[in-house]
Image (cartoon, rainbow, N blue to C red; front, side):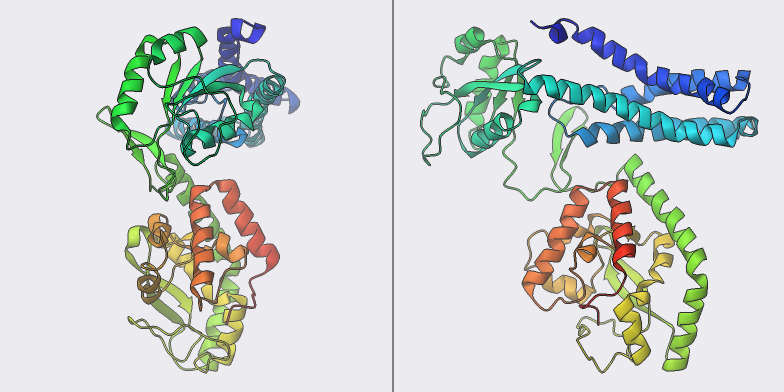
Amino acid sequence: MGFLERHQFSIQLVRRLLDPLIAAAGLPLLCWAFGLPFAPHYVWLAVIGALLVVIAFGEAKVYRPWRSAPLGQEAHFIWIAWVAVCGVLFAMGYITKTSELFSRRVLLIWVIATPALMIGMHLSVRLGLRWLRERGRNYRTAVIVGSGDLGRRLCSHIVSNPWLGIRVIGYVDDRENPRDGDQMSVPHLGPLDDLTPRMQALNPNFVYIALPMRAEDRIREVIDSLMDSTASVYLVPDILTFQMLTARTEEIDGLPVIGLCETPFSGLQGWLKRAEDVVLASLILVLISPLLATIAFGIKLSSSGPVLFKQRRYGLDGRQIRVYKFRSMTVCEDGSDIKLAERNDPRVTPFGAFLRRTSLDELPQFFNVLQGRMSIVGPRPHAISINEQYRHLIKGYMLRHKVRPGITGLAQVRGYRGDMSSLEKVEKRIECDLTYIRNWSLQLDMKIIGMTILRGFSHKNAY
C-alpha cells in the first residue's frame, strides 16, 4: 500500500478544510489590500461564509470520488455550491440591512476570486493524482463481468485512459471468445460459476457487471455471489442503445430510477438559466430600443400591415406559444400548412428581405424571453406544421422541446439555419440541438452568444 492509500482520510480532511479556509481568509487579505480595517462585520461574514461552504459543499457532493469524472464536472459542482452560498449571504445581508457596511469592491472581488481559487486547488489536486496514476501510482484494480459489446466498450474506455487509475485484471464470462469474434484486451479469468472464491483470490477494488439487460437472472446470481466480496460492485446498465437526454439517477421513496430523457434545467440550474435570460434580455432590449423603433417605422413605411407578426410554435414541453417577429412578408401565415420562405420569394417585401437576411426580424423575441416563453440560447422554434412533418421522420425530434426554444443556438452558429428543404439538413439541426441540451452550461451559452455576435447575423441560407 502506497503513501496516498495509507493517508487517504487525511488527504480528504485537508481538502474539506481548505475550501472554508480559502473563503474565510480571502476577506482579511482583501481588507488589508484596500487599506480597510478587518472590522467585526467582516469577521462575521468570514465565519458564516466558511460554515456555509462546509454545508453547501457537502450537500452538493463536491467531495465525492471524482476519479472517473471529467475535470470540468468537479469545477461545475464547486461553482454551483458557491452560488448557493452567495445567495444565502446576500439574502441575510438584505434581511438584516447590513449590506451597506461592506465595501462593494471587497465583496465583488471576494465573490469572484474565492471560487476561482477553490477550483484551482481542486483541479491541481486532481491533475496531480492523474499524473501519479498515469505512472502506475494510486491505482485501483477491477474485474469486468461480461465480454459482450458493453463489457468490451467499458474495458476499452478504462484501458485507454490510464489517468483513471483503474487497472483491469481481466474479465469473467462463460465464453472465453465472444461470438462476434472481437477479443477483450485483458485476460479471461474463467466462467461465471464459482465467482466467489475467484474474487476472494484476486481481491479487486471494483467489479463492473456488464451483462445485457435480458440476462436478469444471471445478473442476480452474480450480485448474490459478490456479496461475500469486499469489492465495490457496479452494475453497468445496458441503456446505451437508447437515445438518452441528460440521463441521471433519482429515487422515488427509496426506489432508484434512471431518467433517460430529462431537461437539464431543473433545480438550481433552471434558476441560473432563467436569471441569465432575464438579465441579458433586459440589458439587450435597453440597448437596442432605438433600433427596434427604427425597424418598426421602416416596416410601416415600406408596406401595409402590422409591425409584428405572431406565429404559433411549440415551446417548452411541446406547449404552443406565440413567437414575435418583425413582419417581413405581405402575408401573416399561421395555419396548419405553411409554405417556408424560398429564395426570391415574392411574398417577402424589399425591407423584409433585409430584415430576414440580417436576422433583425428576430429581435422582438427578446420580449418572448422576458415572458418566459423562450430563452436567448436554445433550439430554434419551428412552425407547428414543420414540427408535425418531421417529428415522425427524425428519431428524437421532439426531445428538443425539453428546454425553452432560443433566439440563437448551437445549430445556428454551426451554419444550420434557414434552409429546411431536405431531411438531411433538418437532421443536422436536430443533432446540434440535442448536443446542446446534453452538454448545457452557462459557459456554452456565453460561447454561443459570442459566436453569434462575432460571426454576424447574416447568413446565405436566410431568405
